[in-house]
Length: 250
Image 1 (cartoon, one colour):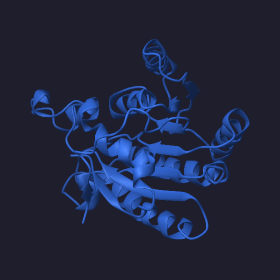
Image 2 (cartoon, helix red, strand yellow):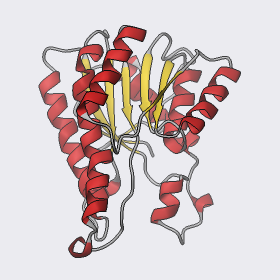
Image 3 (spheres, helix red, strand yellow):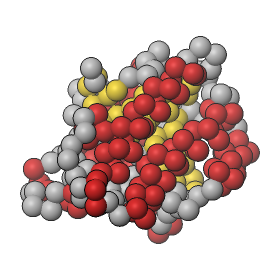
Image 4 (cartoon, helix red, strand yellow):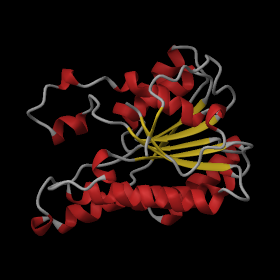
């Protein structure tokens, strides 16, 4: 049964001195998480495909007086296994370890019957939503192992926990992410400091939500900043010992 930590109260220095990588950090939930992690003391690596957006988040974090972040532009749709290895090598060289990895980047694809799904779009969704998180986690195992308490968080969805008509590749990719999270957790629990969990953000006021539900009033959903309690919990020491679990942000 999914766990909710929406009422968790994070102390101001919860993530002090932690190094955390956030994918899809240029906007939406990824940007909110990056800023929230930084506000609680973390040095955040902002990863995304649009440098301009990453620079905006960088400037906001710096202007707020939080630890200076870093930017790592990367298009997950076209990234090769070697690109992920290079990322891990850069992290080890620049920071020495990685304490947290939030797999937030996702694309929606088509909302259409499976029998009519565009296969080009299918491949893109699987690449960004499933293959990239796998490749990045695999590449970063070494630098995560250098942490005393490393947390890897995969982003799921309600349609990844129960299949729903027309959600196609997106729903299937998120169901696969849940299974992958559990396999990683089971494999890493015994001999590493790495814990692995998933989080379902729920209905949140993001551009992806608007594309998925164009007739919905965006104001009916919370802003990304309002759902950060569970994200902070999973990235901080209070969740140490929790692995292989499904969390809900709302």
